[in-house]
Image 1: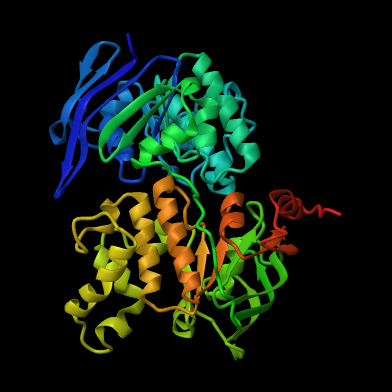
Image 2: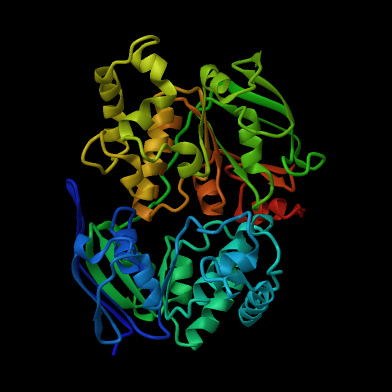
Length: 505
């Protein structure tokens, strides 16, 4: 008997059928991956399972260990033994690890929290998971990887039998990923059933017993992982064979557009600590300049300081088209002709409760709509082109951005900056959390923009992406520039050696 069965699940939003008869099963002790393009219905299906959408908001049946269940909210799902860890963590950073684990369920005596019991239980739980984390430490003081593990401990404190993980490794280092996978293997041996959502197919094939593919809100196929291939899964995800993921670049490099000299950036929390240490670089028209490095190397901070968005102390000397410029705020950067697709689209790239139209025209509103009176007609006309060229899947430009899939949200952010008509475009992790099909579309757009003469600076944690898209690569290690390679010289081995502080002879 399966631990979980979901039969013929259907869910509609205005103008969109997000789930169209999806079925899914999970056995006890099984690692079952759920894959598909952004907008395929993965997150919607998990929101049905978690009680985010109550029983009267969708059609179909959920069965746990042979018994039909009906959830009126998240608490009902949790009581049934289901725990979901979303990509955006739900921890309170001002509280301790122990307080977060037992938030809303703290042990008490006569209405008073029993702090000794709380921290004793938290210590025991963390020890069982093999985590050397102080339960009294503030969650905000932990790295993102440790926070992810605390979220798992919190889920398991509820004796979850079904654990859902949504892109859990997106912000983790390789070492943290190994720690996570060790814990997940142990949970599997204990009989916990796991649903794993990820665009990283290497991880999917490494860990999975089964792989189920969704496409356009439908169940396309379910495979024993050892009996299928990445090529087959990708073809099922996008509905076509995927070859030549990175477009063949034929960029005609022009003059230097942006010259950044002696960029130095200090930590906001530790003002004396240098995050970026005297880095200089330039980028030409028609060029894609890749910036590689491990997490914490200072790549995002480098771009944020140049764009005028870094909140801490920093210094930089800039020239644009051969003329010195001063950029103290993002507004000044935009006026100078610099655009910035930030790493965290939901926090810095979008206003989630506003429409696609409002988001897309925001940075260029004066130019598009007028300095005094706004013109919705002009805004709609301007937004129509990126909606079409970027293939944004939405009923209209009046669709609220927060209802879109991650890939379509990212396209809206890119469209917003293209409407500013930038001379230089910074792209910080432009395909994070995006499926293979959407990645190809963004890669093609990056290539097209470079061919049109735009200067592009690309930061990515995915080394194949940096190597596949860039005309030139610079490498950072602990805030310092440790390497620079042409496309012909930029092998994975040489770039990784520079990223770890070990140049190759």
